[in-house]
Length: 314
Ligand SMILES: *[C@@H]1O[C@H](CO)[C@@H](O)[C@H](O)[C@H]1NC(C)=O
Image (cartoon, rainbow, N blue to C red):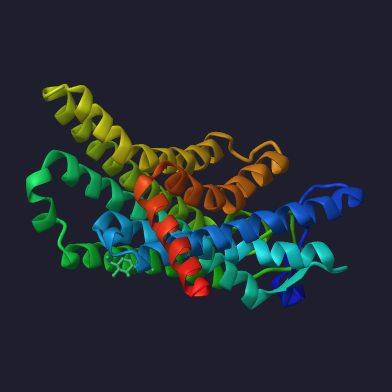
């Protein structure tokens, strides 16, 4: 490849979803509805937790943070997807592409760290119920949240700077609906070995360490329940951990699924479906998983609605 001949690429084309033109409108409406559900559902959770003083506990502070992160994670990709579905030339400027990649990594990791903080919170609540309030102090909660933000900023920044170093030549067509890191690496015409190495190492750390920590805290929870097996204890553990466990399985299920189906043999279709799972479907389901199963959340919603009625009635 002759470097002198390369044109500087100022924008990329996002090919979007592999759907027939006649189905385009149907999918547009579908994604729009799913995105609005995500935004409203997560906003509702944040507002409920903020307003109801019964929900001012560490678990709900983390949950509110998780909802915020879900909301942002979805907003990084879906509005651009919707815009591109309606435009003739689905382009994204170079800077926009790197920005999207940065925030995609940022909120994706943040979610993973928050899930660890939530697992630790459940572990303390079940294994040390008497010391719960002294261990999970507001200071510790805030520190965990700040630590998550710092780590995820560092990680996303590292990948984005490494990506900004690369040069892109003639090919600017991304066969995806957002600026995915691996899709961009395939287009680069400079050496990507450093990027791949960092992705491999950091990806391992960022995914495996949180996953192991979550498994360890659940193992502790299970062993503490088995030590004093009582129907009530098991019920309590299930009711407090059930929703968290479903979110964890949903999140890691898609991520692990993605890693176990490597993109070697042009499985763009599979990759796209998995990407839709974790950018559109998972952030939409999280609020429902929490609020549908949770009595406190339902109570808070009921109170909010009653207050509204009184406000308008009087
Ligand atoms: C996130 O958690 C921190 C620490 O508990 C809390 O102070 C903050 O309000 C939360 N943020 C949101 C958006 O809920």
